[in-house]
Image 1 (tube, rainbow, N blue to C red):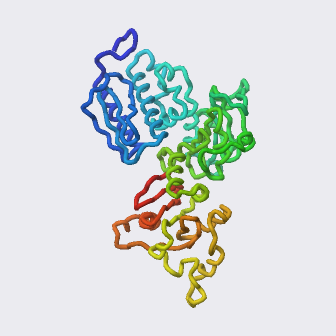
Image 2: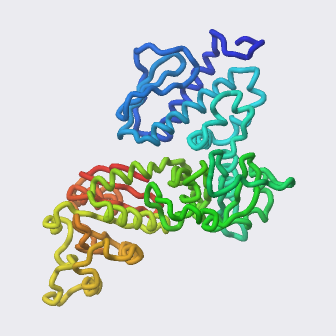
Length: 451
């Protein structure tokens, strides 16, 4: 290393090289656990910049430490997947530059604080604080600071109740509807230190009221999220969202604003560009890929209205932590393979003296199409133990039904709802909502996506 300039020289510590190669592999596996990473024989530049090459959605190649690597995911990568890979590369390159430089290392120790994955999420949303060693030294990472506030709050209770809170980070792009907030002289930085103030957790609930942080990272004011985002009420959202967080999505449609929420379930949600981009659930960050997944789902059903209605209902059920199975059969004539005759809505119950109490209510939905029902009605019906099954036109065939499947299959090791989803998806398209808040789409016996 050149001690005068602090620039990495021709001989770099083998230990540092080896450490960062292992860290890179673990970081990629964190977000893409099924991907395969292999070193190639192709020549690569000796630059310490981690550079992902434009090589398509099936395989991505990247150069790192003088070697070229192949990154092969299990599924085709979405636009947001590519963006996340570049964000990981940006953070890694800057961290390596800092660790190797006497000039910047002591001035940028904050970039090494906290959970590394928080930095990747931050760089995805705003790469500017991570673009170089100089930028890391001179730019505040507001997003990581906000995540740390929420992460610390998630481990705290107030009057024996879990804390829920939220923050809106005012963006750096023009917003025709809002002027940048001006923080008072005594304004506090929205950072970890706030969590030591007990009353801080009572100021905003994250659902209706949230903290507004200015472009310099100061806690400027408290706002009602619906009132703040009302100017965007006529703007179309890129993808359906749960009713509970519609206004949080709308608040980020313009200006580059970012909204972060800590729910009463201990889950963190990150909104940007009018959609939910990330969620932190069960100790792990997940890229939601909402737009990509919704396009796949809509393309599979072929009817936008039906696809949107089912997708939105699944989101609302997931927010309420209610399990459900929503099935759209390709051919209703094959319904008897998975549905018992007594569970079919068009079954003549008058000839069955031993009909179940549930079947006595079948007449309420007989002949009804899903898109003609209010979403709230479908949500309540889906809460009943069992599955809601419909044909490709949205006509409800059954609800609250325990689906038939091959009990001798190896799939029996899965949970009951997962087993039913896998088997039923051989005959159509299935959305499975888990009680932990995850939504999975199954088709042809495979899990196509999970969010």
